[in-house]
Image (cartoon, rainbow, N blue to C red; front, side, top):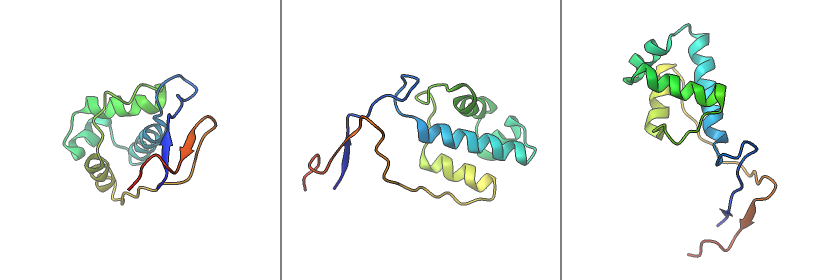
Length: 107
């Protein structure tokens, strides 16, 4: 079993949030492609417009993701609102400075 030990901060000095930034960019692009306002998307997701706005600011301004409560259930609702399926994929990607250890977790 592999475990990533001591991940480094990304270039901006924030903890890793690359996946969330990618999700935020996709949500914003999908919303705009479909001609929805943030308020309309919020209504489809049963959340406030301000949540959609904060999510999109992660993408456009590099805001911290810690203040967002984004669960897989939330992402499934987003996918459903756009008529899409959610797919989560793990890939091997050890950026420079990350130590990958096969002995971090022992069964």
